[in-house]
Image (cartoon, rainbow, N blue to C red; front, top):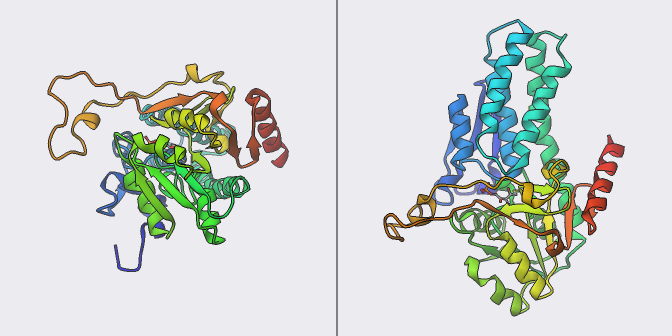
Length: 361
Ligand code: MRU
């Protein structure tokens, strides 16, 4: 990285139109190394998502949209039915890379709709429309995150302490992030927030990514271990918690990085408002409750050795490594979307959010 360039100057996900590639920052190497990689094959795109080289619900959605465009563009046929069949094979393959973040299937379905809505247009025209849609998905993400930031900023005041878990920042989206959007917008206005970033075991997205991007942006950020949130809240240092999410069920239960529900429980105990920041692309109204959300299980080595110099648990020991947990809706003070803040009862307020979305079309 050159001297005056910070991680905030890099785009999380880009489409390289000339070389037909998805270009990302390899987030597994951050914060020590900033490596930009180009993904061109289905296997490379799948691996990048599965291995968390690109991660965070919105960034996964944008990568999948660019990815399916790049792959579709290479399908050599003028026959619509053959094209659609090949497109669907790629779509299902990419969709299998991570199960919990609904933005992945949301973006792929949206791209598929472009194909099925234009069956009479010819394959060349469909490919052009797919490119435009993928670019729009990214641009929309930036607008949506900014709107979440504006609504979120109304919930806090200058000088507040804010705690966040995992990384729902610019590195998890395209700009602003979701949970960090109110922090960045407040920072621009000189709000001087004091942010606590949970380190977020086992993959350390809080320490490696959230602390890195906030610090680079000049925000006052302190890394804490995951077992310290009760202490900082009991000390009165936290005025609000903002977290991102991977899938919100129709009743407001919200799946996010493992450990989020512990933070929500502690926040309730100490009377700290707990906000989930969720683009409507992350709200899944066809999943009734958190119990219906598929929680991704990840390999044991991420817990036992991945970030250590040497193994930190005995060989052969059993490991439980769910990537996400579900925060019960009664622990959530509000769900901050690009169409306003939904509050309990969520079965009603989330419908109202989607009504506003329809109205805005
Ligand atoms: O496993 P990850 O790093 O993809 O998990 C990311 C999170 O849990 C984020 O909080 C969530 O995707 C929201 S990102 C705006």
